[in-house]
Image (tube, rainbow, N blue to C red; front, side, top):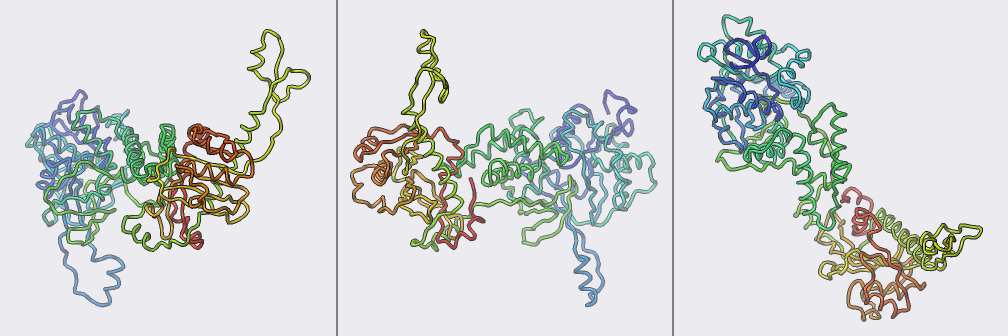
Length: 634
């Protein structure tokens, strides 16, 4: 093996003819480190820790990368004693008849698969050196985050693990290690430079077995031939060691010859931005605005949560929790769906398999337990409660069950919109008072503060001017909120007037999107306000949208303004809109002897406005008892 270091300096060197390179299975960072090692060192033969029965199918499947696949070996049937009734219950409880299959994941981010891919491209000799085992027993354990390989050499990383690597307690693991050590010695007789890839958990014991050789190698088990299958795209997360989206980024970088050294971290940023695009496309105007600041907070949350769990790179659960906490359920759902997307898929003509944690669903529908021949970090289920959008069939079913003669609102949203209405009217009163403010020379009181403008204007006099704000005069009882102007009646076909259920609610008239197009639960729909009118204290008024006295207006906005001016008992009407009142709005108010007080919509938080525009429509008051289980906040 050609290397700048001597055998005494490099812990991987077994002899002048062989090197044992330990790897962490299922790690993209470790795969990059192995690739660098192979490119920097010369070797005649690449040996891997897989049995020879997998060789033909694995090498064939590797050539089809980046299309993922799986090579499976079923256990050979073992002779069982004749069935007896008294043994049936015991066998069911202990799983005596259950047989675990074994498989090799053809994952581009597996260090062994990456090395095989590189060796095939360079036409190197390849040997599979593991012992044939019928009932494979994997050896896996928690290892430090391989992101450390960005700043630490593979030698230092592996040697740092030595104090934590326990001696294998399975007889099968010991026999495999002894057989692989024996195979390395046999390969040294054929090649001058042998590079052997092994599990980092086997590495110290394989060195021990190599330097203490046995005269007779362990015997192979009788095994079934292996079979290659494709993997359904929605279960690739169980095949890959990295997130499918991150694995896809590695493959894209390989195709484009881009830098892929930091994709395990930079890929998380690309995941969030890619999910943002699908989120905005799905929710449209109802989507929350996802700013760079919010994404930065989400990344910070991911970093902190990863550190709490003693990791430097996040898993899917960590990313999902951070997205949910910072940006809500809907964005978290899009993040998780995007993370499971792998862009490189093509039909190989093979039968397809679905995967789970230590499970395979075969093409015939049978579900079997299975273990990976390249086991990475232990994988387990973690629950994250998210309210997913119902499918089309379910929405159509709820739509047909809707009773058109029973509608009501959702009280938590009523409280929010009423609170916001109070804020808008208070701000309108402040504007009304500021119109009557005056300035006077300072004498013995600064009144409501120094008027800087008037003081500078009379700078030559040397006098100080102060503001005098008169006490609030009058009240406001009508407030018009226009969120989308000009409003297209085709976009807002639902126009209704709702009356207050109690004294703390306003009389409400509004135009909104058609709630029947957005069913989110049984008897629960959602719409988006285009504009609304609030009258508080509540009044019993005719339906705004059928009142013949308002037929002189030509637009949805003018109808709300005209209704506010007609039913207001005060001279002024508060108007919240994204732009100042146009001439037709002012003429409408003048015609009804009222005056509009404009409050710019930009004075309020955009994300809050997006939330307030959502109105959930319930098909009767009884729906309120379970509505919170279906209502999803954007």
